[in-house]
Length: 240
Image (cartoon, rainbow, N blue to C red; front, side):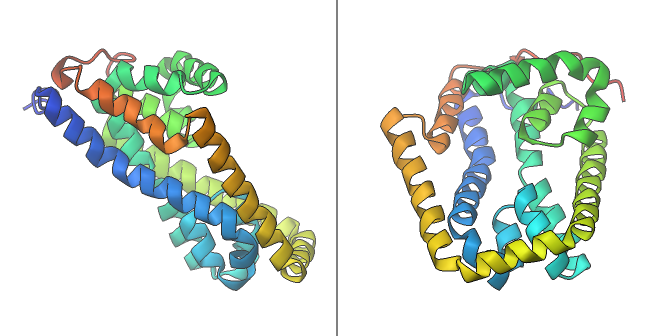
């Protein structure tokens, strides 16, 4: 049975499938906001929890010299890889509709997405290795890259990113330790500032009606209007 023949054609099943795919992404977005709010406290007191909530480069650089290497690579890899299969699956099942939804969220994202789409036919594998972010994973799914190939390239790119950050942390260990000391001394004021900034961001997004979590509902609504077995693709199937 082919991959397409296994896809449900009932649009209401499409909504259920999309809800299943975006629920973990929403949870990770919330975790990321928690990390952004609490990082001045977590970076010294519980660095592994910090990178479990959000494995942004700045958090990885700050904690890399103060956690066990095995924990750094294990937790860092899991957290970086966790959203990727969900974005890949959204691209795979919802094709051009998913790309259009992502493109119109912001002008900057739209330009980036269109560039990635244009390059993906020729440079798909290097893009997944070098830039295994949400947008590239979505395009990879829409282009129907072989899932096993995607997973392998994604893991290689993620581990390479962690190795690079480990190298940066070693080279700049002195400045990083000084910064961590500053953060420890000024933890309370920095915590007040970070929580306030996250709160201001949420309030401003709510006022504009463009809160990031709510944006996922646009694609969920589109799921009721398409038949999953006949979704336009972003490109030809990957031959491998």
